[in-house]
Image (cartoon, rainbow, N blue to C red):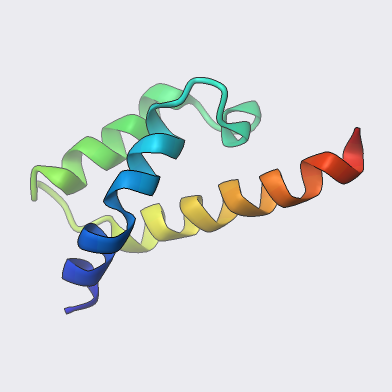
Length: 70
């Protein structure tokens, strides 16, 4: 149930965050690894919604504080 909601409501935002090479999370994480987690989830190979939702929140948090850090 939660996974369906997550895929429906966050898929565009996830793709935007995870496929954008300028995403702030990539200052701390390897893009290829994050994108593999996304691909595995979207293909139903693994259930990664907890990891992906945490990464979306992490990216949003980084964006919210980035203006204060400049």
